[in-house]
Image (cartoon, rainbow, N blue to C red):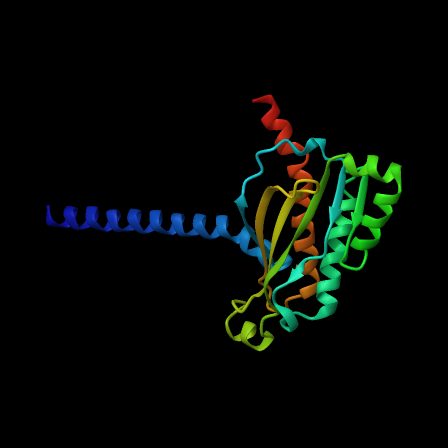
Length: 219
């Protein structure tokens, strides 16, 4: 009887060990793809809407994009700022969503206003709804490569932008989002991080002016 009890206990121990091993293998198997993706692409995006888009923005066929205000000053290289602003323009154009896309900066605003006041056609065009895209660079760090090696990639490169959508005529806020892109690779690439941020900005603008509001129209 005692021998049989020991045998049953031994079998039970083996079964429990086998179950635990199977769970561990399954856990590793399901986590490997996401780890591989992060290691290969090295980009992680976090975003949240500060002000939800509730208006139907499909009526906006014209868009005016302003360069982002750099709140990080000299902490972010000027070429990186230029790349970000240029790629936001290019990615938005590639959406083929708007009839006219205007790039505006402080130097061209007075000129455009003067032309519109003296040109009747300009006044007609100005009366059409126009979506204004502007925002801020809220955070930036290129990370420290030496620390990324020591910390197994945890010393991330980070870029955070805050994007607002406004009606040009009324200056009414239509939507606002915060987007953070992290480059988690040991050998981070700031240019790829900037490109991804521009992609996210264009995606937010295009999505707000098309798909999301079409879905709301069906409800």
